[in-house]
Image (cartoon, rainbow, N blue to C red; front, side, top):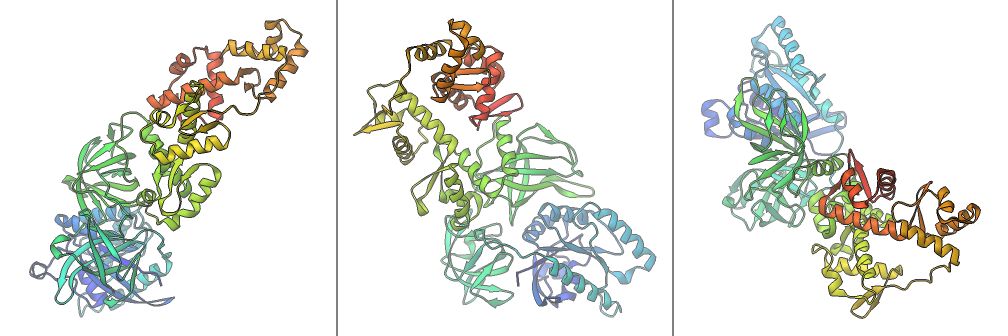
Length: 639
């Protein structure tokens, strides 16, 4: 049965550790300072035996500290939880860390849980009813809205053991309702403890966030880049050959010392995850935040078990009001990159605590890792917004498209998307078959270019050859194209054009292909075509051509039909025809403009064409329909 991790959350001294001890028989306060002060300062771990409708289950339990000074540890413990047990003392009710822990769990994507009112023996029925009502109001609109509320006492001799039995039943019911985790992603384990055991050496513990790890696997430690080998694996105190996503696991690592690891490190298989310094995110700014959030604010970011200082840059506005959600970038220091993947959740904290919600001000979901730095203008926000709603196959295509002429190798797609090659293969094969991607090389060395980049490169090559009747040396032609284009990409595009008869290769020179003989035109048809070439982008309407060239209308209509059928004329719209070479030249100039300026507005388009609105509007719509451009508001950008 799939692994389950249950975590506690709640205010200091509300009985989280006592509840775990009563349920499991394990005291998670293991440090002398915790014993002396009677509070939890570090993460504690236990295992809970349950009787569920599907049989006996053993689940992992993570007990977190409740004091506001230890929120860093609390967030680390809340990472990877399947269920949360929100613990509230019946004699005190909802307190500041109750609210902050609830916000953190929701921002981290926890979606199921229950509420336990501890210290039941200290209150009467009337008080308990009042506290229950307050708790319902506090969790309204959150993932715990409607969750079970169970009252219990963990004090020996209180005579309220039925409450603990009820807690067990509700946990078992929640476990039964949980869908199984997927194990298809790349392996990642977020390290929350590092220690040594005599005779074994270095041990790390943490929650497996994705994929699986096996004995003798080589692992990469991020962000340090050090490597180690897995010599042993334990889950629930028992040695196992593999640990899966959702397992609380202890790994015995060889080839690395204890002082070379720390909480916040991420273990992964080599070449599967990259440390990222710039991340595009969808940020939810809590309604309880103290005031508007300015762009480029300094914040503390919690991801998995790591805490780093970052600059938070809003990409489509200057300020974010409390309660709003927006696209943003997290920019972290070069020394502390995050081993994140799209879909991961994160927490953002400020530096001044509020009276009711601590220092947590927001959080959200990571949209893109290894992101380019956002610049002013709407292009970056539009690109990230398209990624937010993209399907799996669309996401692959969009990431390759964003790489423009450089394209992306398969290994880079794995690092960006968090899926191993075999999981990406079906979607990639479909994209290649549909022509959305051009694949260079095969198997593990595959490299991909997007169809829009290929089309623009082909247009540039064709234009360069049209201006050189005697052909161009391959190296010279390559030098006229973007430097980001790899040589094998250039070779593949040239080969593709040659295979389609668009160019010819003579040794180390490339020239425009003679191609099939153009249809023989009568003198009259050739004259009409030449006239359209002279009219350029402002020809008369088809119905007015006969009068313009002083020929019979029926004869001119037959000529226009032949020229359209032979594709010497292009129908821009029903009452606007243009010479094919005029349209091709305009397309090349448009693509060059967009390459340099990213977007084009109506005035710039008018200046580029040299025509009036009567012609620029249908021409713009024609290129939209040809999927050369995409209209976004008053601007157009390259598809």
